[in-house]
Length: 401
View 1 (cartoon, rainbow, N blue to C red):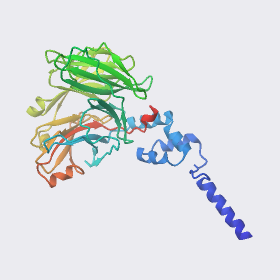
View 2: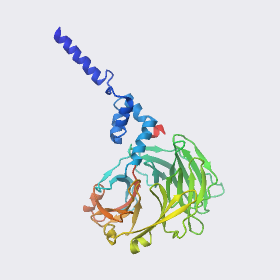
View 3: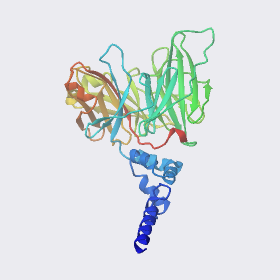
View 4: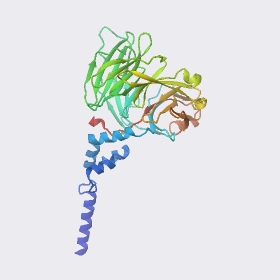
């Protein structure tokens, strides 16, 4: 009888430790302490923890936890980039694949997106809070590489006049309204033969597109970034001169920003530098004398631009390769670092990530390795096109936007 009692007691203790209904039982700690521990964990771990028990799933999905996790992610120095890579070795471009590129080690690791169709080859725009927006003509997708989620937005099309027809190009970008904490996608179509635009916007979490009528953009986007509650768009007018348009995410209205005086228009890229809008002028000076001129918009109200001039050491070209084409990326919280990566990699056995610090004027070169770059050693004709994006960990699920 004593043995049976001890056995029953051990069974009872095991049930209390593991949970009678199969769910783990947390230690007797205040919920805010448990939350503070969880918010410091990697996304991959949190996704596993969401499957442990309903209370943990509820806590990790709670908006306050999601906001706290994102705030910590945004405060950390950027240690990696998401790189979209497409193999151009064959006659037709292959779909994009995504990789996480570590800035310190140069290690490239695949980022699988299970719900991404293999035939997607559309335009990718800079995202916000780690989300990436991909436009493929008829469909627009928003991806979260952290959680491996892909949201397919409701299909829509432009409302062009019935008597107009011709080739159509489309672009899409994601913006964020900090007041309402809502994400919105702006989509633009251009009827190229007539230079006629059409614009619509959709709030993530809804299924309806709204028409935007007051936009003066008449030509394709060259570049776009999101900051200060707005989507900033680099485009050009009839005279092929650059313009910077801003789409206010809250009011869904457009306005134009005056470019800085002295900027060599037609030679610029739109970026963010320490959360401020920046224009990079580098297409000529970079290859001539290693010069990059950056104009930073310090104040949106007065539209005052500050000029920052950078001169890279002569050795910077050593890791670029024969294509002489680079993509410049400015990491969020990157301590003033500017990254350069070859956009076309061919007939070389090594690829490099170059990092230049604006304050110290020092440059570091890190060899990139891991898939798909390891294939260089097997086939010298291998050809890649690369584009880096800022990487931010975000636990937010598209089911809860």
